[in-house]
Image (cartoon, rainbow, N blue to C red):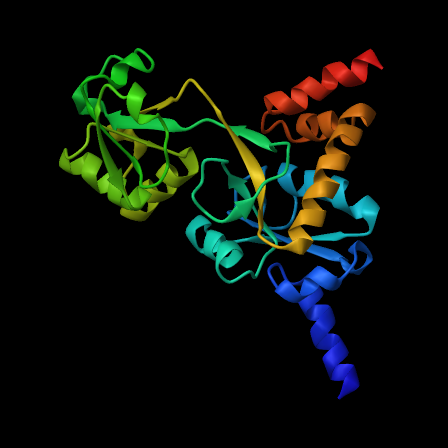
Length: 262
């Protein structure tokens, strides 16, 4: 009976959200469970990729094993924020309304895509192209602040719905992550031959976002401590070069100047 109770307590210590972990020290944290959608070269299903390699470089020297999982975004987010199955999710932005904790340093810069039908014969002129049009993006994602909008906004609940609205003429353009657009097109059996896709000019920092709790607070402090060390040693730069993917965020690039000055 005592052995069973001990196993349960240790299991809770590794669980992302169990409140009882507050009494455990960092030495009890042997594994971090991290989830992300399957993004080729970033978070491959086999555990390879830029994001997984960065997290291993952060945590494994401290004796914390990284356990990667690939799950579609909406389900992955719930499994971090509601069910606490995972410690963290990769790819969230700081303006999210979800109950998450963030480290000081972002892991990547994400550029959203703008898609519109070729039949619309739109002459792309950057952000000015949005003016006067009806633009759709995911509900809850504040791509452009309200005061800066010179267009009509319609928020959809899924990329599939956004694509449907675009086809039906309910919106003139949809702004979304390219991976989400691509998946919506595949699921609908629609080819890219009918659309034009452009990148939004300004990227957004994306983070490894952690579930609330004492374990996450330690994991975040370790992340914040290790990233400057990885920059100073050149290991982080090597990982970005190795995968030829992602972009070092501005606050991480700033560490390069500090490292070179030393």
